[in-house]
Each structure stands twice: as C-alpha cells, then as structure tokens.
Amino acid sequence: MNSSDLLKLPGLPDLLDRLEKLLISTVESTDPFVSQVAGHLISAGGKRLRPSLAIAAAAGGGASITDDVLMGGVSVELVHLASLYHDDVMDEATSRRGVPSVNARWGNLVAVVSGDFLLAKAAGIAASLGTEIAGLMADTLARLCEGQLCEVRSVFDTDRSIDTYLVAVRGKTASLMATSCRVGAIAAGLDRELIDAVTLFGEGFGMAFQIYDDILDIIGDEEKIGKLTGQDLAEGVYTLPTLRALEDPEVGPKLKQMLSSPLSDTDRVLARSMVASTDAVSYCKEAALSYVRRANSSLAVLPDKDVAESLGSLGIALLDALSIPRESLKLAASETFLLFDKAEELLAQ
Image (cartoon, rainbow, N blue to C red; front, side, top):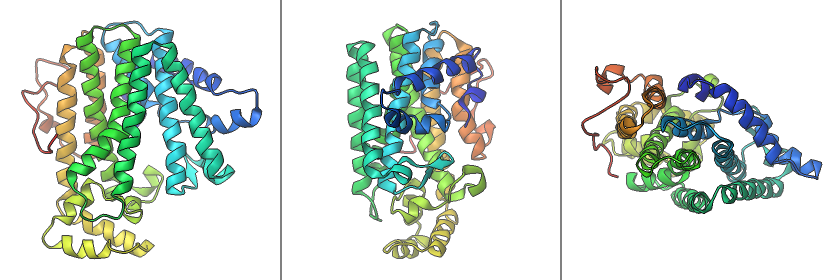
C-alpha cells in the first residue's frame, strides 16, 4: 500500500519528502556506526503510512501542516521502525524491506539496542511537542508491549480465543495507528471533538489493516507480498483466519492435530490450504469490513470532506484488495465519503 498514492492529498509527496529528511537527521549520531545501524531501515524505504495518517488527520481538521505535525509524524514512524527491529529479533528474520535485517547483519544485541535508540529519539520528540503528546506516546509504547506479550503468550496455542487475538491486535497494531492520527491532530491544535474522531478512525483502520495482513498470510501472492505465505502458521502465531478454521467441524480437528507440532515447509503449505478451504477468509473479510465501517463513520465530523474521503479510501483499498464488492460498502449517494447508520457487530469489541 503506497500511502501517497492512496490518500491523494495535495502536497503530500512534498511533505513526505520533508519528513524523510527529518527522519534521517533525527537518527544521526556522532558515531558513524550508530547512524548506519539506526538509519538502516529508513534508507531501505517504506510506506510511511503512520506519518501520513498524522498529516492527514491534521489536514482533515482544516489545519495547516506545521513543523510540529511533521515531527509528530517522525516520532510515530520511529516507534514503528523500532518495533520492526525488535520483531526481527524475536522472529529470527533475515531480511526486511528487501535488505538484510539488522539482526542478521549485525547481531541481536545491536538490533535490540538500536531499536531502543529509536524509541529514545521518538520519546525526545514527543516530549518537545508537549506533555499531552509525551504522555500519549508513553501510553502507546505500553500498549504495544502489552499487545506483543499477549501474542507471545499465545504462540502455538490452538485454543487461543478470538477475543485474545483482538486484544493483541489492538495493542500491537491499532494503538499506533490511532496514536498517529491523534498526534497529528493534537500537534495541529484541533478541537477535542476532531481529535477524538480521528483517533477512532485510526484505531478502526488499524484493526482492519491487521486482519487484512493476516488474510494475506493465507491467500496472498508470495511474489507480490514479498514473503512466504503461511509464516504465521509455521511460527505458531494463530491469527483470525486460523482461529476461525479451527472452529470448522470438518477441517478444525485435522488442522488442530497438524498444528500440535512444528510444521515442515510441506505442512505449512498444507495447513494454509486447509484454512483457505473453510469460510475463514470470507469471515475475516466481513470482520475487516466491520472495522472499516466503524472507522469511516467517525470521519463525518471532519470539516475537510476531501481529506475525509481520502482517509476513507484507505480502508476501501484494503477491501478492494480482498475482492469485497464495493457495493457492499453502501456508499451514500449524498456524500463523497463513507457514512453508515450503524456498524455490524461481527466481532465483540
């Protein structure tokens, strides 16, 4: 997902170019090695989705994009990058964004400490933007850790509940998406109603985004997504599609037995096919749709309707990628962005 292409906000590419320079300068150190390691994934590129959300949240509230908004975007991107450094250590990943991962190139210790360095830089920026943003970032870091711990605790647990899965997703993914929007809105000085609205959007979009990613691990095209599918299954991380498939009266027992021991490459492909053979993918698509509806309904209060439409298009893009008919979104003819009378309660909040 290219956030610049999807959001289509006037001036966003130029703003992201400015943000890129700020990212690079923020992690520069007097020690060339620290600068190299801390900037490794920045130079590898990325979608910059989270800072784009911060910028769009400010713009949607009718505010101009100040240096504070951009620095807020830098802070959330640094937190995201730090989480990737740490995730690659836990997953023993060898590559990230088409380049060797930090842990693969320099070792786990360097990767962990470098991730901590990025978190420290993010915290410093947040503190410079005021006590509210500083407190928000600290709370978000706690939620990220809680979500990750919840997931780690459930590894190889075929009895993992959907509620436990949702708790982990809210922490490890949706919390930073919500914070990205909230930081941009606060830094832009928006009214409290607008700050809360874009925060709700960020959380709902983050939930849909993670479900979308989990579906791709089952049905994605390996060449397009740039990684092996079924990796979550192989690593014992049982996400929503797998949890739904485990409830299938025919496939579930066989799948549970297969997941009771580490998977070979052949078993990984077979297990993925078993999940895809059930209604798990369609169930998860509907779950993602539910969260997109909830997220986009909060955009009605934004004064800039063009930005509201652009933000709403992010969720639509996910659904289009999963072949959910656009008609099912029930676009209101009188509006150019999504409005829904009520969200379907397909998954318990």
